[in-house]
Length: 245
Image 1 (cartoon, rainbow, N blue to C red):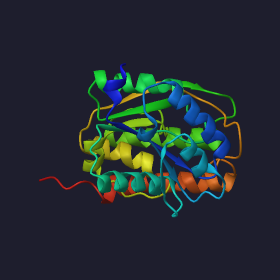
Image 2: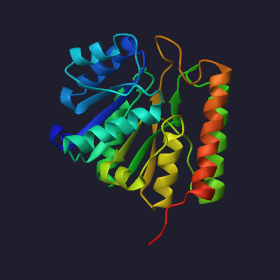
Image 3: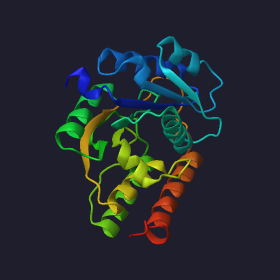
Image 4: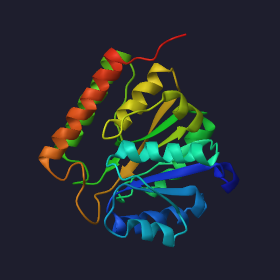
């Protein structure tokens, strides 16, 4: 894929206290030579370390969202894009903890472009998840939610993975609201409700090299995240379906 084909995309990287991991993520992304530094937007979600300084040292665009939550960071990026007057073709969302394999970015972009998709999801289940990168509760929650999606929507997903490409116009149509851990299932449910084209592809997922996961680091937090994802699924499916004209 040539650089000009991704010249109007934006990479969104939510981070909170990921200075060591973020350094590697930014190095690997820029080594792909697919994006310029100003296309990489790091959303600092309440960091108390040097995450934002690391991002600025790579000339990446940095925005701050003090309200904690992965969804809040993504909504912050969306708000800043609107305020800037930009209209990118797509957003590439990737974790700042180094778990997502940046070498999979090329595959995501190729499928997005060639298949004319609204959403391309990197599946850690179809691909390879390094031992210890996904906890039992994460795997179980993924499986349960994907099973429920199949039951209610007759669409088979294998994962709710964070690494994905979403068409910007489709993202606007979705009208996402979740500010915490339900953002990924909200995106997938809205895509189905609006009959958007969604494709999953296999990606590699690594065990984080530094620090502890904010989601799976403790059993209590993993349970809270799982409950929020299930709540979001049922709320969107039973009570907040899009109004048809």
